[in-house]
Length: 161
Image 1: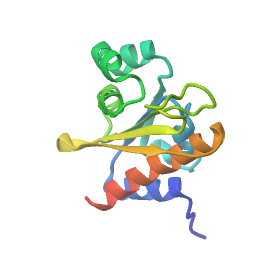
Image 2: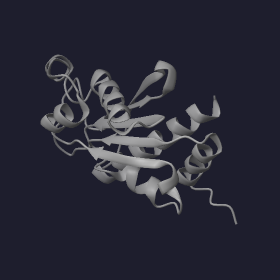
Image 3: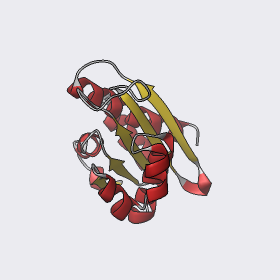
Image 4: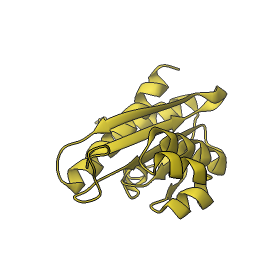
């Protein structure tokens, strides 16, 4: 029986390429890493993850620039990009995935509503992309949708290589 879960498909694709992955998570609180490591044998490709919930953690662990946080905020394309790059450098992984967002129920604004999430991916040869999403639902639904999207982004990227 083949495991069709998204995280299992990501693991299979990573193994097929001989690649490793790491994570930098904020609003998902480690959910992406949790799902990746639920797959038996994931230690072959998961190098680690950072839960950088505070701005200070983003700066000190992932080297997100203070200027980025001041100019764009913790929930921004720029911060997601720097989080992914910082994680990739920290762990020396082939791919890094980052997630930053507003899971709610508080913290949203007209400009940045609850559910706004940015997911970044950094890879070899300078590859880098960030996707923007606005999820509906409660905190748990937003975290779950963000983790699904992060894993799908990795799977899509691996399929293009």
